[in-house]
Length: 184
Image (tube, rainbow, N blue to C red; front, side):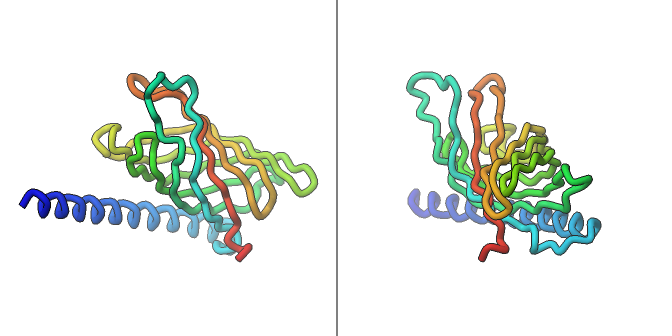
């Protein structure tokens, strides 16, 4: 009987997680498509696949064994560049957090673009709504973080710095690979 209860709990958790992902993806895509229509852009032309994959924890306590392989997937819509220098964006993603728990977010922001031949460096901010198992009992919370990106029109690396939040976390750098869906 105990084994059956564990199986039922696992099924309920998976169902809850899939509902949460569906809600986040629906919201992010609605925001992205709405932003694209408002700016006159074709939504699919600027959609990107995000591959989450790496965190670098700074000054982690000895023996903490924090997960630095933050695998997951997401989407990012980049709007039309405003005044030849600002890139508005909307994003949604899910990944394995520092404690190997699923974490999801939806958000958006703007990046100041510096163009160098075929390469760009973007600096800006992202505002988001996120859920984490070990933070606020998996209830959504708001946040704002610095955002950076370096790459080309087709492939970039997104980075963000997450400062230490008392009492449990350590500061970290979070990395995503961003691939333009029009490449495929």
